[in-house]
Length: 122
Image (cartoon, rainbow, N blue to C red; front, side, top):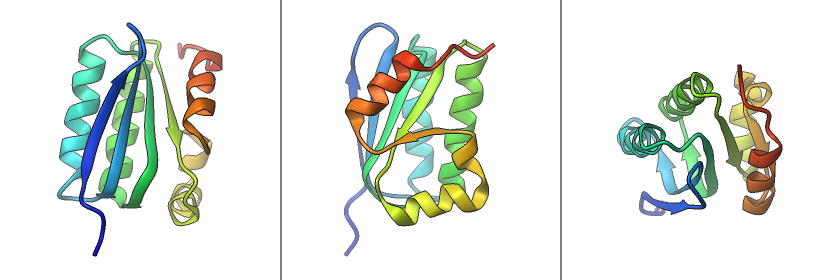
């Protein structure tokens, strides 16, 4: 039985925020992730980590949510970094070419460091 879907959040400071996803991100759960990301961005967060460490699956709806978040952040000179170590999820990013769009790292600490190193988009 797949892990139950849940989201958790952690404010790091005024600009940086982490959203961690557990379970599957699909047509049914992606809107909840989209709302969390939108609320974070609208609340002034411009440097966001999406932690997929406990994510077991994502589909095209989830990819659309992540792309939308990056677009919103770019208009605010922000950045988004993804944490992922699952090979199946990595393959989804590779097949779609999104591994070239997103900064993807294997650990949360590396993602937070990458947020700080990521230049603000113009």
